[in-house]
Length: 255
Image (cartoon, rainbow, N blue to C red; front, top):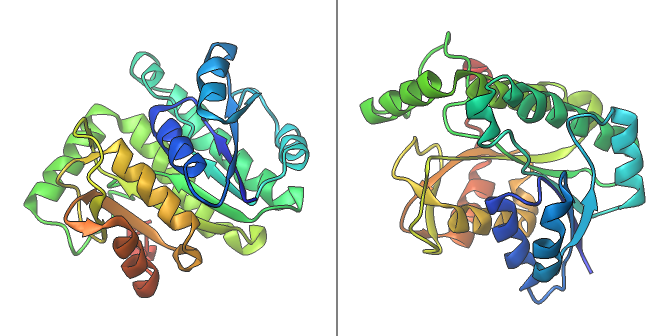
């Protein structure tokens, strides 16, 4: 019975991932790490095992203990500042950057699972360097809009991605970084566009959740960093292409 531990398990995307995993024939176990007890009933109703733990205040040592106590086959880092980042922009660095990096270090030290899926965002890159070669004018405008609205959030995502990629020589994690565009409320379509695909059109959280599940079940996606937007390719086929092409939208020229 495969098990997945999700940091930030009370978020909307994480709940969609949980629902999909628990509906699979493989009988997944989902361990959902959350900060507030009020979310326990809803996650229990989904079939997850909630664990109360604050990423904001936990040390690497604390996280090592958690990972060893609740061992899993894979870890998904879906935690983030969320709406709190609008009221307190610096909070993005607390969770999206600093807590994420502590989780990376803890996974390396815990001696258990190495498989990690990280939720990032489109256009998380060093903006002092060249614009990605596959971007069109609309992609550039969308990136400028995001960085203008949420500069600390975007920087936090960029710094977490950069740390994961550049420090993996010592950590040895089997990571995949998923970079979705803006979310819509369109519901599940089962289809996406993934790879070096830019920033549009928008995509539903349900479809991004399907991408995460497909990545978990396709070991060829290890080491891939890719964008995902709305599209017309079935999710499993899109992830097969990402794996075959070993897509890396975060090469040295963008970090």
